[in-house]
Amino acid sequence: MLEEKYNFYSPSNIKINDLDSSIKNSLRVMDNLDYFTKVHSENVANLCTRICEYMHCNNQFTIHCLIAGYIHDLGKLFIPEEILSKEGKLTPEEYEIMKTHTTLGYEYCMKDIYLRPYSDGPWYHHESLNGTGYPRGLRKNDIPYSAQIIRVADEYDALVTKRQYTTHVNISETLKDLIKDAEPPKNVVALDQLSQNERLGKINAKPLKALFKAVIADILYEISGVMNYVSYLQSQIRRLDNVIKYEKKMQTTKKPVKKDYYLTGMKLLLEQGETLDNFKTIQQEYKDALVTRKKRIDDLYKEIKIIKKLKIKI
View 1 (cartoon, rainbow, N blue to C red):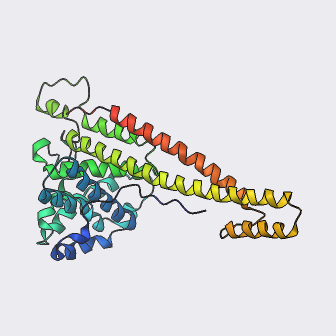
View 2 (cartoon, rainbow, N blue to C red):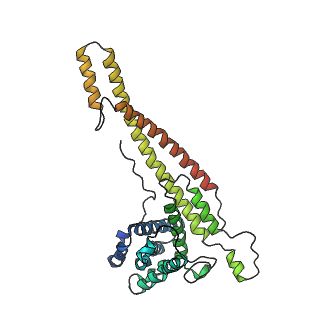
View 3 (tube, one colour):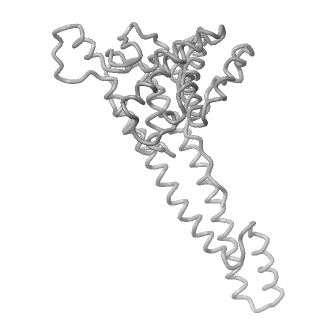
């Protein structure tokens, strides 16, 4: 059976390989990251680009967010391996060390003339609008808008990875968690500046709303891919239906010449790995897979309806 291939994120419109050669040389440092951090960085860059697209940002700002998003975790190159790859929860001491990847990444960028303009990615991507982030506990307008976009993309991809999604079915649960971070907590008494800032939430709602549009586009992209696979399954089922027809005709005819004719026809229709003994079992596998994929398409369309009903206060 042909393997179904699907990429969770639809392709980015702007690629790292399309950038100027000077910045590309500096970006090669990212190849030294571990595999999972490297993939996460690529995903965040992709998402930043697409968020900017749905926010109608100009090309220059979009490219800036792409690069800054790509290198946002650059500082993890300097975090001890035993902390970076530790399974389970970090100790308070280990977490403090992990948090330094923001300043370490910033310091590295400042030493490279080509990465320096994009140091906002590493330095600010863990800052929160309500002042609860790190490394400096900045609030609202003190955080560059590019970093606010990166924060949304970073948090989304982290949740996707944590929940080990292979499809967008139930992705609305992740988006609901992001909404919680974008909306102010209820029943906060705004008596002083700190309380007022707490009412702002952690992440910017506007990039989050743009992310929703990107996610819906990705779901439609997935639906398209599943539909193509459904077409493949249906063609295989029809092919094996013809084998069954030949088999029935072969069983009902009494003429040896015709028996040989139908037998030859059956063998010609069989593909690699299929035999006269197992083709019916294989066809049933195709039918079972078809039912599963059709249900997935239905679930994905339902997911789009759920996402469209989710409200983000801006």
